[in-house]
Image (cartoon, rainbow over all chains, first blue to last red):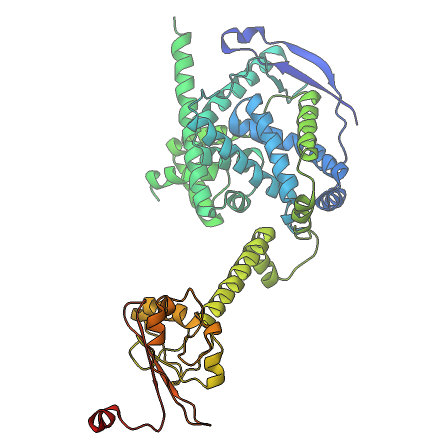
Length: 228
Length: 262
């Protein structure tokens, strides 16, 4: 299946007015997302079929890459994390039970890998690349017919939410990403995070409060900057 | 509920994470309180913003590169009997198992580790048991409560054969304090037994008792009646180099009477 999408290139904040809207075809050749075929692929992969495992990877790589990017904030780390996630999936696929939701299981591994990478990063005291600093990153535009101003607004929103997410602690970020972005239920998030639903609700509540406060501060800064 | 209590619930209310009862309470409050309604709107915007937290569009090359590296690492994983054993020890993925066996299976994962650990424990136990058996075979019985005394009775045939002793008393339980003496005794008992009436050819020349030929000849000769076996008593002193060997006839008169008569 081939599809064309309109994408925009994200440029650093100071030169946001130079954002370009480009029309380019994205050649996406993905296997069908039929659940039963995925189950068969997983079964074959669990029995050591490497070709089937590659197909499973193709089924899930976009979700994994998006999740790791949301958790880690930059493409390089997201790639490393995705690679590690799939290696762990291959290693532990035998433990996956058919009554489980594969993607929930996959998200559990992804969260663990991202936590490990963040710990390593903190122990090595390396610079944290926060969200929105991936200069030149291209974001997908929801409305293909949006004008340049709307595109610009959307880009700024991406940056804003990215930076707001960057201020959250790991568990709150993981909870809010799984709940609000991936659309999982609170109970599913609790299972993935290996904690209780009450704890997850508390983390989500705290994260939303922080995001709201960050947005308020950002609006106040923008208002101050626009004053003569 | 007052505004402060509502304010705590608004983040969850905005994301529809409240139960029905509390959601209805908050909803009723928000309809009559404009300040809380404003805050609720801000939370709703925050949730909406978070829902649009999309990653950048990664090119197909990025995914292909990740896939290629993963497959490369999988190909590079060690091959051989150990890797095959590890793969074989993986549980079957699609066998529906009842809850209890599944629970046990989870306890004993990874299986290869448990198998190796069990094999080591069994090997160690067998080796320890073998050592314990051999050691108890070395220990000879000690006469009475005094571990320094060893009483042996020997038949002439046995006396003529070096290295054979027969315990008079049944084996007594060993006490921890006599461990060292018991070892010395064990060594003494295993050395060739020295008897006065044994042929000289059977006496080991390197035996401490026979280093001095005169001392060897000074050992009393025992005239045992035919068919009667002489009583032999060995006394091991605290000094391992000194051993007292006493021969007597079973029916002989007490030594004091003999001494008085002569």
